[in-house]
Image 1: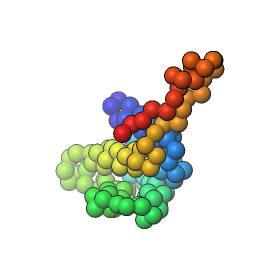
Image 2: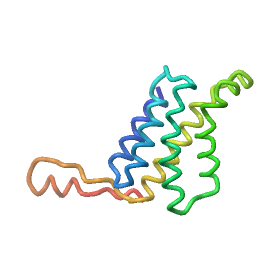
Image 3: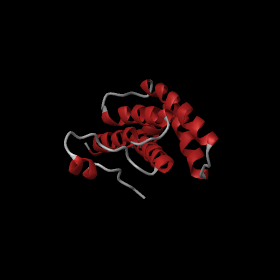
Image 4: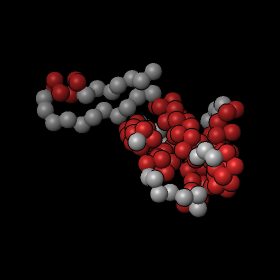
Length: 136
């Protein structure tokens, strides 16, 4: 339940921001696997698209060293999720996906620093209340 709430919140935050489409799509794809309990390791091959979008973003901007580790974990997750789960008796997939989702939201917010204004119907007082919200 908590992972679904995290997934929904992160998708809303990234899609409301003015970040690149690749980050938005990657956050939606990663959040899909956190929200559904029926995803298997063979379904997670589609995470390679999220890795490609994130790699494109990382290669064009400044990167923290730990972001490369997270990107490698995203690529290797479909291969090693089942064996590591059997070995450790702990599901590591949701943990890795939460970290990746936090990375994506952090990148989306650092790219623009503000949300898009919410469209409201009404007079000037409603327009004043719907100004952009600074997050930093």
